[in-house]
Image 1 (tube, rainbow, N blue to C red):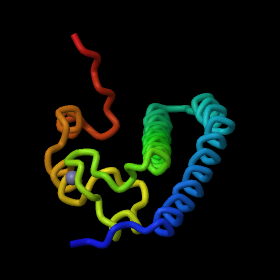
Image 2 (cartoon, helix red, strand yellow):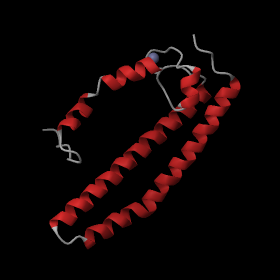
Image 3 (cartoon, rainbow, N blue to C red):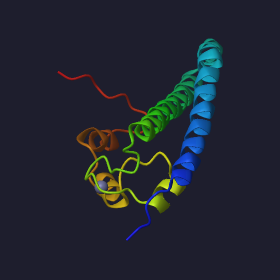
Length: 143
Ligand SMILES: [Zn+2]
């Protein structure tokens, strides 16, 4: 059905993944260097409740980006590890071939398109719970 990945395809994916990993690491490093001091000074400069809410929203946004960057870095590293292990093109869910075209477009993909669609259609319990909360609301601790 789909052509298998060639050695040079894998090299191409690996180069893209390594480049992405470098960019993500640099961004995360930059954030740890500047992010904390920026939000700390923003908190000091807050004067009224509206400003405080805005500063809080900004901090949440930054945190969301940070979480996404960390997740992407983990996925990128996992993909590089799969190249080393020799199961790069194997779907993490069904074990079938992920597909050459998909990997060339999205070198960090760990599922075939079918499994990915299925996973996105069935949100996790936590994601469903989160969607019922107001945006940016903190998830209450378990009782
Ligand atoms: Zn699959």
